[in-house]
Amino acid sequence: MRQLILDLAWDPLPPFAGFLPGDNAAVVGQLREQSWPGAPVYLWGPAGCGKTQLLRELQARAVEAGLVAQWFDASSATPWMLADDAALVLLDGVDQFDEAQQHAAFTLFVEAASRVASSEAPAVGARLGVQFASAGRLPPVDLPVREDLRTRLGWGPVHAVHPLAEAGTRDALRQEAGRRGVVLGDDVLDYILVRFARDLKSLMHLLHRLDGFALAEKRAVTVPLLKRMLNEEQAEQQTALPFRE
Image (cartoon, rainbow, N blue to C red; front, top):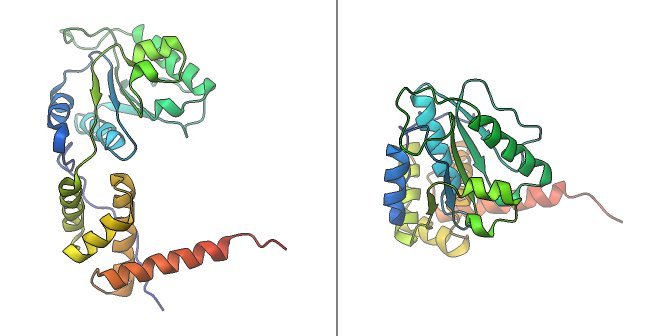
């Protein structure tokens, strides 16, 4: 019988310490140093390039500073309410917002604009008492959202986020594996990168599952172990499918 392993909570890293910037070093530097509140920030790029992780790093920066951050994405049910003490609002996947969510996001901007920045000397260009940071797969001009929301999303700095090259992806997986105490050999990395899309979010999820499977099996991470995990997952998915006559 396989040993059950608890979903361990790893010690959080300082904001941006766990993000490998690759070609995004300038973007990371600006996000790390930007004064709040300031003009809204918008990040765009293809799926898996790290947009969501960068928003999470901003969220971590707010939490570290003792500030309240609110997160909204396409899975967040409306209505959305701006907290009285909100300092940061994060909008992820804005290109996937439905009509109600677009209205909710626009309302957040309007309500935030009516608040006075708490700082006695707000940053140059600051207009809101709340910092906004948003992300989507398309630049603001191409977003399939209402015009008044598109204008607000693209009002401030707009940054293109570039996917990691293969070397950067390998480094990111090794770094996360090392944090978990897992050794990833070149053969395992080769197998993963040849057979799976280089979507860093998906690859990190795969590594999380593989780590748990290896702990349960009390085995080192190898290609045969990875294959066995994938086969068992596929079998479980097929078993869970509803039977049709």
